[in-house]
Length: 65
Image 1 (cartoon, one colour):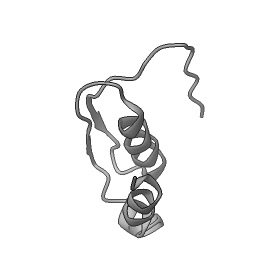
Image 2: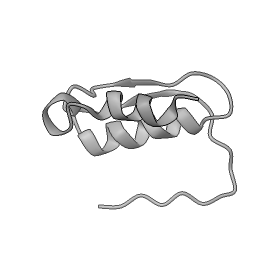
Image 3: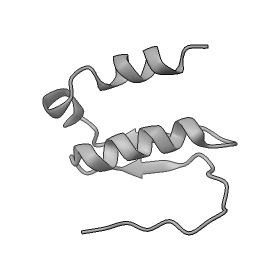
Image 4: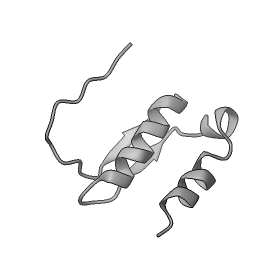
């Protein structure tokens, strides 16, 4: 029921299995955006289309530079 990240530790890309949990998927995608190196792959993120269908579009709009 919780997640705690102690820092300061810089994030690095990796592979995450969200296992169908939209909360984990969204957190992993945002973490991937903040990663200082490597790429991030999130599998099992299909639940995003049900809970927040525009998540990726909104994130892209917010991160356009």
